[in-house]
Length: 402
Image (tube, rainbow, N blue to C red; front, side, top):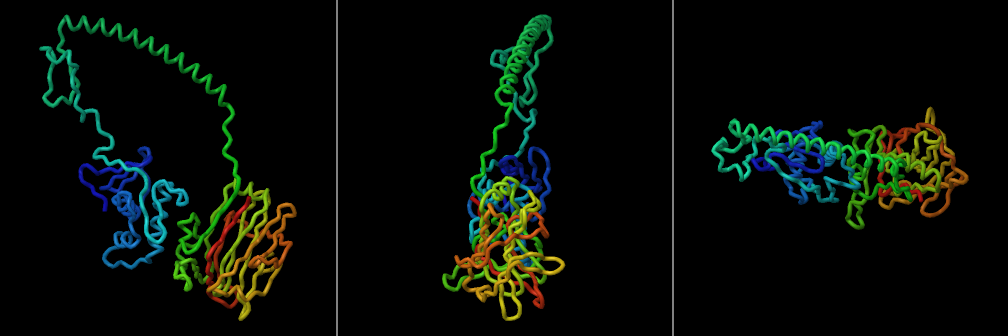
């Protein structure tokens, strides 16, 4: 836990001030809501002093004495809550850096203080050297109060003349200040009336990669309490390069697109790629622009029907599933060697084609208009037909437009 001695009571970083004793977090003086576990996590990262704090140590710190909390889910949830309060983007972190398979590191410069806002009375105020020997100067033993001069006729006269001169000087300074401010304002309004345009987007790439937690890659979770928390080991290279999702209803990750990203993608060709496999039930990868410019939603769906497996392109979801194309492909269930599925969209004709492992399998897919919820890039699993459980394994899910 962070040191809370007198010299390190407050940690100052960026626009934030954190009380290491009371766990009170403020931004520009405004108190921010911060749960206790998130506060303890912040203390631990600050105490790390810029070094990596392992996930195991953080878990033991937040849930001591053998308290049972899911190792990955509990810590990931806590990290995400802290990032949300700090406004920290995991893809471009300013405060908390994720180091894959190792832990987390606090990367922002930190200043430690005892009193974040020292009062004027706490500072020693010393007299000018020219007054140090004056008998009418009232010395203070601790020099914590402003110095004063004793009232006598001579000093009163001098103070009157000095006051008049200071008043004239103050008036001149005010006139000069107003004159400079007027011309400064005119200069700003004449040269900056047209706001500078934001840098144009040249490409859009959103990706879930390998066995990294999607929450650490900027994705959100539809059902945070679902049974989904598994990385999967590749038996060939011994690395955990896949993310496994299990649900008894439906569960998915999603990353919305900004208005600028949507506008760019809809004026270009784009590609939705999913390197994945279906264990049971149904899996899916989708691109959902919401109702932006009446854009349609495009889905790649993977299905288990008895001993057969299919890749399908959705035409309707409710009240019943309808498919624009449905192709039997046994490789859908090849969990050890996931295949590559792609939707390649041609904006000139506003349709997409389906490719499997680089081979064209279907074309002319128009997408559909159901459940356009502005989810952006989305992938997940669900139960289907007689299967009460959905199991899917994802190695890569990627949306790109150039």
